[in-house]
Amino acid sequence: MERRGITALRWFLLPGFCGGMTTFSAVTIEVVGKDALGFGYLALTVIASIVTIAVVIPFARATIKVKQ
Image (cartoon, rainbow, N blue to C red):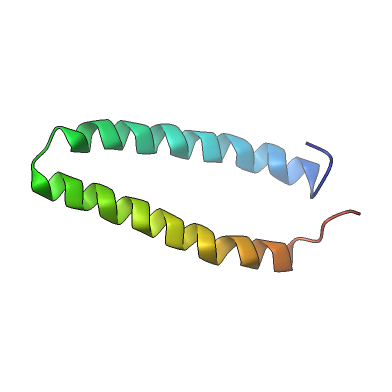
């Protein structure tokens, strides 16, 4: 955990990331049991997640300086 970035920040963000993944898994299980509207919601959630990652990663790299 100490190779790159701010260690304290990583310890703060890691549980949130893992919690988000478990929440997403629970939502996926609930949605799969629904009709076609549920699959649309699932697809929209995945697309929105990918777009969010594509926007946030470059912003984070520009904002947070990495130790060399």
